[in-house]
Length: 449
Image (cartoon, one colour):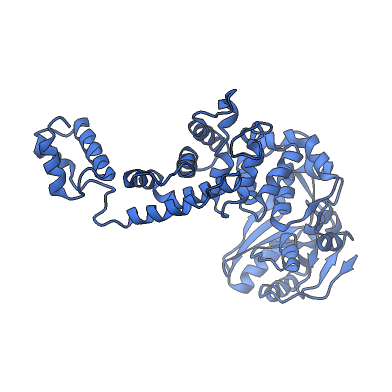
């Protein structure tokens, strides 16, 4: 057993110590909270492991002592949660779990602290911290693994991952977030158990949460590489797996898979943008032609992104935004100084709220290739800002449907909508001045419109 000097005080530890004394039990902070405190990383939530099956009892004492709302109790697992000063504090009785091969619902029984620590995912998450800030390494390897930046399972990784297959994604996510390397035994274990990531063993919602976190990590490229090396990519992102080995010429220096990983790594840590980068070229494998072209791959890719994100249970709003960026991703890349202001305005209109993200995606796309004119996007960005600042704005015709009905003597209906759309387009293109009078005069002088 190893121990360290106490770390900086946490305001929750005082009342936790008093509550443990009142409950007549011993308890420790455990898991990611301890790991991140030692790494100097923020971690608001505190997980507390409690001896003698007294997790809910300690939670109740803590809530009364601090004047917090009564705990939410999950009796089957011997856990309870208290919200204290906006921080969730999870209390869990020390327990062991066993699983049937075809079920993710464990049979839970009381256990010693050591048994509880051995059932955890990684040794760096099996460290204890008492409420004076002293850290204990009951398994004997957690502190050394933390110092060395090594992710190792307390038990054989096949057993650890078999109990909860989501731990395979968590290993990759921690590697991407913390910059840790995986113990050599982990990737072979993942490859042998990859199919256990499928529902109902692991819910789609849990996979979605891990995918979000690893994409938003400091090292998303590493995460995607490890998904591939661990044999998990076809289970989680088969659309991306299909891009492996799809060669592309021209300005490209990687196959579609390698280019995608580079592009994701060069985007800001924004979920919409990184998802768009992830899916922006997934249409290429099915549109690849003998001459090296990928005709309409952006349209196919947008449809595939919609299907993939629907399968992964992303929200409809997020799916719509990402798919639109995939559909539009080539337009900034193909920008040239010869573009009219109308073409620039159309791009701004079509991208809408995600115009900045579209430019970030285009920058990443170019940076992940061998294009020799990346500065053209800065010219485009300047022109986009100029047209967006135009006053009066040209992004919408100043006439209303009522104006059009009066001018043409038409009732409400599709013809009014068609006229309004056409006039909007002409104003956007610069063919009509953006004033009500100019638009109505154009309408009167063009009865064929």
